[in-house]
Amino acid sequence: MDCSGCNKCTEVRCSIETKCQQLDRNLMDKWGAISYPIYQTATFAHDGFGQSTGYDYTRMQNPTRQQLESIVAYLENGKDALAFSSGMAAIATVMELFKPGDHFIIDEDLYGGSIRLFNEISKKNGLTYTAISLSTEDITPYITEKTKAVYLETPTNPMMNVTDIRKLSKITKEHGLLLIVDNTFLSPYFQNPLNLGADIVVHSGTKFLGGHHDTIGGFVVVKDEELDERIRFIYKTTGAGLSPFDSWLILRGIRTLAVRLDRAQQNALELAEFLKEQEHVTKVIYPGLPEHPGYEIMKKQARGFGAMLTFEVDSAEFAKKILNNVQLIYFAESLGGTETLITYPITQTHADVPKELLEKNGINDRVLRLSVGIEGIRDLKAELTRVFAI
Ligand SMILES: *Cc1c(COP(=O)(O)O)cnc(C)c1O
Image 1 (tube, rainbow, N blue to C red):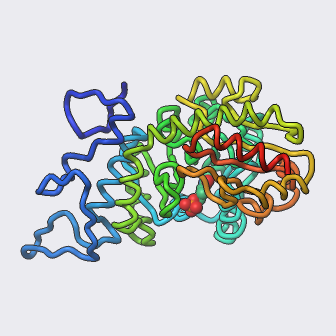
Image 2 (image 1 turned 120 degrees about the vertical axis):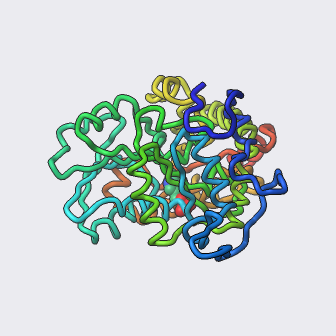
């Protein structure tokens, strides 16, 4: 057990399930509240000239947000975590580390909003990128003297490609590149990229960390002090920090992260097996299936396979029939909550991704994505059986 970075105790060696329950004792309020208070204040008074409680103004720091940041840093084995008003605000802040002329390499299969950010905002700011398949291609031929970073998700959204983080980090270290990993799909419960050699981890806290589809948030987690200072500076200057109330919601969500993910993962595996047997289902992509090309890498670098699965059906009409007829399962974007959601990437999460890239990645009008929740598995199977038979 690696407890480095933890300041909660000197002796107890916590498992991750326990870590989810631990408040940072150094940040406890003076009454010892176990449900951490929502410090709903914009500013903090000083006792006198030159004195401070450590808090000045909520854009810079707020106790509720700091409690959340401390727990997320603890879960990811980071030195520090920063909580943002959304996952995209977190990723946009990381991109402020770069300057015009800098180049980065990205995986070609990513959350559509990230691709939109790189295309519409980063490009305008003078950054260039090369998109390749990081799960199958070597980055070395794409590195130039301008290359500063590599950005990926593993497994990717929505095609579930798996990249070997440890192996890639050896190359990024050799070339002095920052390795940035979006860990949203697995959450810190199943995977800790910083332990595998990544320099920066980002999260959409909206998803598994929040876990209830009731708030939007994001995180950046780092292990290097100098990098942390640079990101904290951008954060306080551009001002996308998470509000106290939303910080509290995500703090509450994290308490059940372990039990939610265990259950959702079990449901996902059973649904993957079930979908494989269905007549109109032509492909099931779940990294917990032994036939998935990333299965062995997942077993080495993660503690689980997650609750996201993608499948393909034999016609666009059949896909639309599913979307039009689900009742127990919601037809909605987003993922990582207790309810099962079905998403149509081509018109929802990936609507703004260039056509050629969609085609290359196999995202067509027959591809559906499930974020599997914690409902009874019998009910989920009955729901899909009913919809398939319509
Ligand atoms: C949702 C998501 C994001 C964006 O996060 P928001 O909280 O919606 O801004 C980024 N990466 C991945 C993998 C996501 O699923």
